Length: 82
Image (spheres, helix red, strand yellow):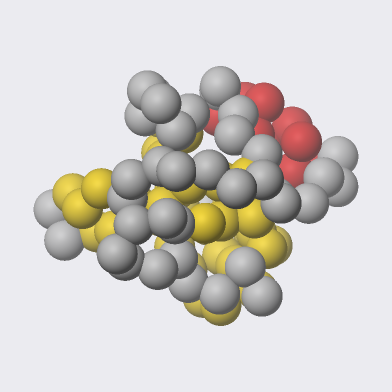
């Protein structure tokens, strides 16, 4: 997993975390997930990413162009909701 210094944002009571690898589009993210690529959530801010359960992600890290709700287990995304 890559180490990155991305700040977590809090929007309307939801903590947004980022994904590794960082995808420019939601389609690329979903396609990689469907192809079996391992994708992890991370946070380098004061709010930690969840290791298990539902979480909200935003990407790409530098621009925040898209968002998704995901299920994670041991920090790895196992389901994409949106």
